[in-house]
Image (cartoon, rainbow over all chains, first blue to last red):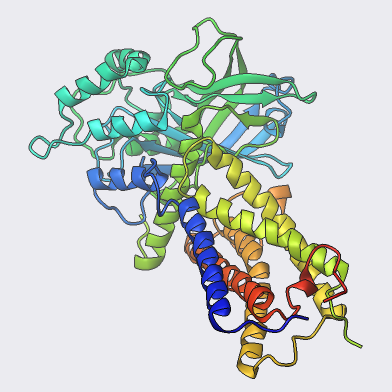
Length: 348
Length: 177
């Protein structure tokens, strides 16, 4: 055994150890994003939503206004050969869902925004869970999280009009030609008078994995079996769509068809802004039946994060960068509203 | 008679877990601020490694309680001896608490768990907030404790030169000196 050091030799070595520990800590701080280049983070996206729409403790940080529903999925069995997920074979799968409107302000009138969404959780009898969040547009305006963030900034409400500045939006779209398909959808969009008569799209693509491990890229949509009727020109009720849904469910269950649209080689699997050709083969995977609705922001859906990457065996994510960013941002939203609920007792 | 080095199995576990824990701390702290395609990969890796670390720490605690281990050098002052004991107790507590908090927070948040593990906490948003916050702060504390542990090991090896680091060294131990 050597003798312990003393004097200057000891001081130098202690300084060296201190420097080493400092370097290790700096590496940790860099990994945490506390130092270094300011990349786009989920926190910054949620901060921006809150800066624009206000801080609404306890609410989801986007699609803040919604209602919980429940029902079941009646599988047709037709998708079972493409995916080993039990949900496509089990005759009746319990479903929890949430109808919502776009935007981070929970007091927006139901008919004040074009975007509507349906989030679903399928719980199959093998213990697996599938969550999906779908919107009424079939595509996004952008292909990357960074461009999405630019879009959010371009839509910042003007303090005078409280609406997005049209010139700024125009400049954004001009700089983002990938938004063509979305703009075409928006130009032709005719709002229906009900959540029940609205179609909802996965927008992002996924991969179905069959029993042999083969993979098939897919987008899905739930198509309303309730016929379309146009939204009246004048709507007074702030909760028009929620009240309509409750009214309809008093008469009986509502149905949608879950349709899987299958990509072919060359289709834009990883780009949510680009539609696939209309003639793509699709499969009727079964019928979504919604039976009950809860009071606004109450019920089983409220404390769930509809992270689109919560997938059962037999469904895998695509390499769409927006899909990964959604997962990260939903998690941040869930964490924040859970803390708000704890700190202030705030529950929507 | 007390051994002068740790049992080879204890040394293997120590260094394996050291690598995994440092990787977990870096993955954990970077994945929450990342929204790229790396995010879902890191989250999956974090859950799988966390589960592996839970199994390893249980084995390690069992070994620590059953195998003989070398004593600290006799010339260590009582206060330092106390600090060494307390920091090791804290390391064990955090190594056990981190994966359990992770598992419990997934349960409370209504999230699916790896390998379809059962829930160990009720689905409750406010409980999730507590567990998620605790998981984060326990992670920072674990990192600080690991840095302290590393610093102490280096002081033993380079300043005191008392053979403490050698007792846990992963390779063959040199007999001479």
